[in-house]
Image 1 (cartoon, rainbow, N blue to C red):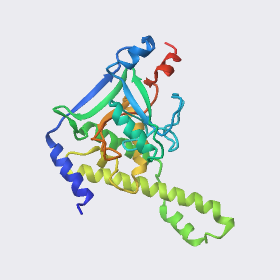
Image 2 (image 1 turned 180 degrees about the vertical axis):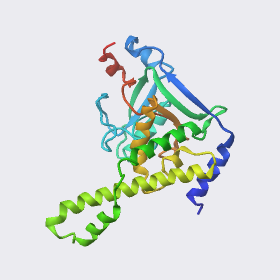
Image 3 (image 1 turned 60 degrees about the vertical axis):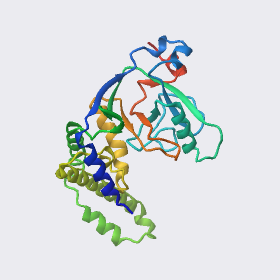
Image 4 (image 1 turned 90 degrees about the horizontal axis):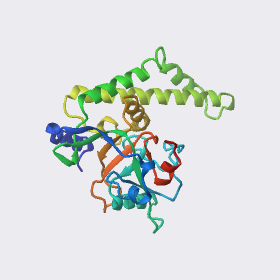
Length: 273
């Protein structure tokens, strides 16, 4: 069986000469000025395939695993520019438990997106630009350096090992220390993985950067990367994903890390101009 890391290395070698499309602003026309027909015929129309029907709201906590978001390339609201692909996403989220596919038409307005597809071949992804990778690495270092300054993980290890799990008097303290130790180790491991990527000096695949190739600490990036991107002024990212089911053919995914710049026809009508 081919090692996953070898697969990533091959992808990164192939990507070496690719340049990303880069920054795009999607949605020049205010959706609040459109009729429903104009909305549906917009060239910028996107589609969200959901597990079940719901009323779109900007108050959605899409970072909650129970709500209609996604996590593959960061916690966000996942859409695609192909309605049939959205139907496939709906099917995947339903685990084939229903024959009814739920697809919401979504329109962005003045959304600043980083398009990571290759400029000369939009069917593949380009590597992460050096300035984004370095900025993200700096962000992670600044995030966890001060947080754990002076922290001694051995003290928590000694406490945890020195108290029985059946000891009710120390139960809450053991849980607190276990969680702190786990968070410390996860952040430390993730930071080290990013530094290893930098030392390799080869083009960096986004999923490698987010540790989505099976690493135990990948959950950290699901929330930190969107925070970084928003800090840098981006509303989301465009990326070619592998499909969730065999029928999908590497769909183009538009991920929004905030809901202020996207909406359904109904939600835009309810938003003040």
